[in-house]
Length: 318
Image (cartoon, rainbow, N blue to C red):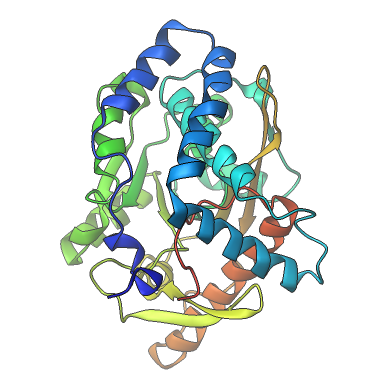
């Protein structure tokens, strides 16, 4: 398989050890966050120079976005800016796991936040479909936010590929368990796991999964739809889950609104999916595609608003 058509799950981690991540974690524990963010600039430049595949993927995405928007967005093609944004995102993820991201850095929108809070107040959970646009870890703030407004701790189950994210997840295990999630390996999803997740949601938990990467195990089981004006593959299983679980579904995006070394700001968007999941079996396939299409439209909207925060560093359109 050529590198140009290599599946995202086959790409080797650039950092083959978690020692740099552990060092970063130690710095964040002992130093002010702005000092660590300052160090990110030269570190990113190093990877910008030596990791050509990431540079190429960033340029490909930005050119596709620019063509989709009539050459308006992004205003400049800059792979370094996208890689810098990703590096800062790693720091922010660490800060989130350490509980260092305060509410004054996060702005919720006048969207469907009250809807999901009412769902949680009723003791019921939901399915959150996120993406690799922005920072998924900001949903931790949602869990804490809910605890204050709902009056209870909100369990969070994250479905992710443990093998591909091995270094990062191993590092996060060293963090105070109070801030940890229940991580479910996406490669082990089966009937038993689905029952566990359904029971968790019924008991008031949030289940979180990204909708913008195809399955590492079932690579042919995809939904092919246009994204930014060109056909791309999306994971079938993610958009099947709402129909199996029969629970409310929300699309969530956590995005940096202010790039500041000293006081970065973030916007969290939560928008409810309006597809009817309680449909007949004959209607289900069409509704799965509609659900994926609604997700893609949201993804496109936020790509336009935050063009440098796309962190899929591979050939997304194959």
